[in-house]
Length: 208
Image (cartoon, rainbow, N blue to C red):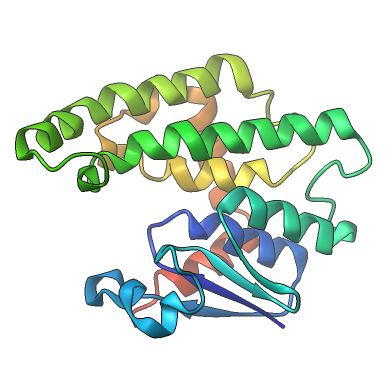
């Protein structure tokens, strides 16, 4: 049995969707950031980083979204969530997900977690003001250079799709108009209709 630790409105949604897509048996355990449960000893024993997602597997605990997504794809190969038999194609998926993790998500995090990078209140406010620009630049790269369509990698659905969908759901909150990026916006709308996405959202958005 797998256990996914998640918090609503975080990147944990991507792994949650993939577990649903794979038909996995799993438990979803909510971590309430408002109550600072991510800092509690019980959760730090699972993930000393104090962040989500964390996936408890029979072999141990995994963290970091790109790792979780690839693990799920490899654990459930029949779900065909990644081109596991094509090293170059798989590397392209990993490159895309690494960009989301290391660049686009970090730009988003400057809006509410500037304290990770600065202590000066003026510097934190400056980071917040920059978010619409940097997040838009990230989506511009995806729109013009990395998105094949109709799914991220082309005709085949992969682990890149729930990850992009998850981050694209934050655009308005980051001060970015989705209309600037019609391919990404169309992908977000298409993903919203998938049963696995709706199942994961139903759990994550349910009242605790």
